[in-house]
Every structure is written in C-alpha cells, then in structure tokens.
Image 1: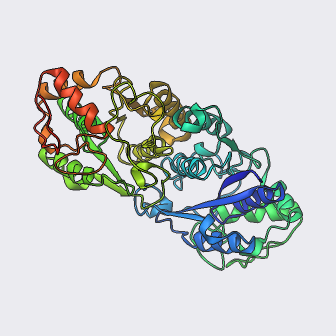
Image 2 (image 1 turned 60 degrees about the vertical axis):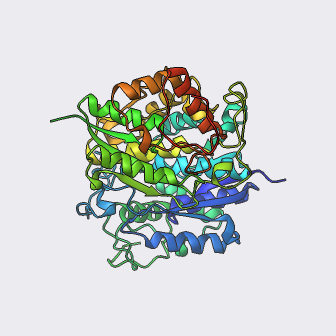
Length: 231
Length: 231
C-alpha cells in the first residue's frame, strides 16, 4: 500500500509544487487547507482546483475553518499589506503579514489528521531562501516542531513518529518554479496574491517573490497580473 | 500592568484550578476553550460558567470551534468510552479516549492567542501523576512544544518567548483537589465526565480519577453522580 502523506495545501506555488512532488513519489496524498479569515481566501478556491486537477477525492481534502481563531496580522485585516517592496526588504524583518503562530497551528492540525488517517508523513512547502521573513518557515522551527509532535502523539510514543518533510526548504523561488514546471504543476490554477485579487495585484510580497521566481527561471507566469510585468 | 496569561480552560477540575491560581498570582487571564465535537461538549458550558464566576469579560474568553477538524478518538465518537476501569488500568496504556495531537493543537492556538494579545505566558493544567496516560500531558512534550513555539513565533525570535507554565504538573489528583479548595475553586461549576452527563456518570476514567482525588483529599465532591459514591 502506498505511504500516506498529509500535505499542507494553501493553493499557492510552493504548496502545490510540494503536493505534485508527493504524488510523483507515489504517496497517497491527504491535503489539508485552512480558512482563517485571510484576505486572500481566494487561495482556498485555488487549493480546491489544484486538488481536483490531481484527482484527489474531495473527502480526502480536509478544509479546516478556523473562523477568527487566529488573528493579529495584516493578512487577517489588522493593518495594511505592504506593497512594492524590493527583494532586499522582503525577507529582512518579520513583516506585518506575519500571522501569530500560523504554521504551529497548521502543522498541529496536519499532525492530528495524519495520526487519524495513519499517514506516516506531513509535507510542508516552506523554503528558507527567497522567503518572506517568517520565523515559522525556518528549518530549525520545523525540526523542533517534529520533536514536540513525536513526544505528544500516540504514534510518536509507540515508535512510529510522523516525519515532517520540507522538500523545498533549500530551494530559491526560481528553483521551485523550474521544479514545478518539470513535474507539471498547473501554475494557472495556483494563487499567491496576498490581497486575494485576480488578476493578481503584482505588488504585494507574495506576488513580487513569485514574479521574480518566474523571471529568474526564464519562464512566464500564466497568471494574469493587474500591473505590467516585463517577462 | 498585570502580566497577561492565556489559560487553557476545559471547564474541568484541573484547568479551573489552573485558572484560579493564575488569578491568585495577579495575572490578567485570557481563557481559551475548544469545541471539537467532544462527547462531553457540556464542558464548554462549564468553562463559560467558570469564566463568568471569576468575572472574566466574555470578550477575553476565546472559544474556538474546531468542528470535526480533529477526530479519531472515543471522545469524538469513534468507539466506546471505557467504563469502570481501576486506577492501575487508567494511566497504563494510552487509552482510546486519546485524541490525536489534541494538546498540540490546543497549545498552538493558545500561543497564537497569547502572541496576538501580548501575553507572556500560557498556562495549562496537565499533570503527570494520576493522569490518563496521554502522551501530550507529559512534561517532556510541554518542554519540546515551548521550544518549537519559541522558534516559530515573532516574539520568540525577538527574544521574548512565551513561557508555557504547568502549575499542576507534579501534583496528584488529591493534591490538586486540596489546592483547588484552598484557592476557592467553584467545584460545583466544573465538569469532568467524558460522557458529558449530569449527574456525572461516575464510571468513566475522568469521573473515577476525580472521585478518587476528592476521596484521597478527604473532601466530598459537590457534583451529583449517577452512581452511589462512598465519600
């Protein structure tokens, strides 16, 4: 029987590539996505389209509605999302789009889901290069989380701890785009824009990192943008 | 200004004592409670009564509705809750009332809430003596969780990690009952029964540990029970 893997799926470029890699590697994938009042709740639609594209049965795709249970971020409506920042600014200080303990919450749910369905792995598309400065995307956080989960779950105690995999952690955005293209990621179905706009705004950190990734990879992003992009 | 503390409040004996101690120690308390389809959702009513008893403004009490996002336990309807187990059996193997990664999920939310409201502490009423055999109640799990949270939050990275306090961790049930009585815990408002019954069933692990605790403390539990209890 194929190994089961829970994959965190926001519907963005990274998580979709992560899911495509898990499928390529023969995993039976159980995606998990979250509604948390994010401005870009459009990404949930993208997650659904991506899961459908890959033929994942809807009952295997867990969509968790957190309501307003996590808050305190520009992404949840507290303050404005910064626009037009250059690459040096993005990834410097922790930005106002940081959502308190978001990946801690998301990974905890992924662990619970994995344990309930007997999955041996949780995959998350964090990357520590060309990233947005979020502390909960760093490998040292992921390692510490996996250790806490090992100690706090039945499967961990019984000697079959759930592995947390971060297949993109050492890749820059351009490398992720190239890898995604290689494995046939349906880029047009994915969604990255923090403002949740379609055409994408092209000006928030998420759009800018994405555009730069495609440019550096020598590819053209099939997503429509509200600004002129020199491909 | 008083230090703010997020306190995990199920409405049971332990978490209510934990909250009473935080108030005694001068904390401004932000309780957090969870609906997760538990059989004993009655405990949420207890949590609300307890918070009201202590004059905590309702807007400071965060009640998170997880729907069916955590599952796979007798407490969430998968299998029967065991009855009439003796003290030796309780706390032996991990019981079927184990909820996959529950405290990982609960603590992650508590961290997010603490960070959003500027609380420096999260209090949780786990105890490793007279406990139910849950891996996520052990001090080694709590320590590993705190480390993951330090690495995965803005406040942790900025050098003010949120402390996870476990004031009951070294206490047996009798000591918790005595301590609770000392600080005036309104025992009659609390709820422990796994079956969510009132009168409490008196036969599930939670009822039996509670009854034994009161008996060993030489006190009578003001809760009504459906079985005869020899106080």
